[in-house]
Image 1 (cartoon, rainbow, N blue to C red):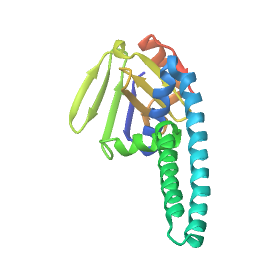
Image 2: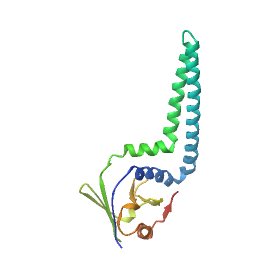
Image 3: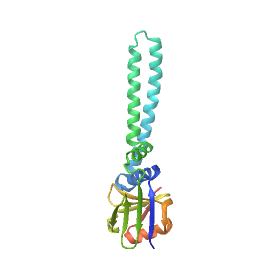
Length: 187
């Protein structure tokens, strides 16, 4: 059976890759989950402190004639806002996934994948690459797509909605058998 996928990546595809990338790093998977929760918690705590400092700064400006205390509190408010943003950006999942899409350089490009028993090809902007299955290091699947990692940081993303020939369900067994790697379900 041959498979054909023609896709234009959407934001959710790249955000899903971000999740698959962190899931694929087994050694840091648990640490990543803990640090993500901790980062979001610390961000929330910093934002709460910023709100408290900001309201205190407004009160101090209203009551203090020279505004020295209000200025210090306003500076602390900005500091906690910055720290909150830092924690959210560095460890917060939603922000990291959004950043992955924002930095993706090939928005709007059509990608075509063809799979047969010997190799698979990827075509984009008239450039065709032929790859053997042995280059695949790992294969992951979530509810909506497959991720075929050919290096620790790069993957071919196959949205299930874009299968033109063959079904996504049959593809799971095909790719696992042909590449000699298990398809690991995530989420």
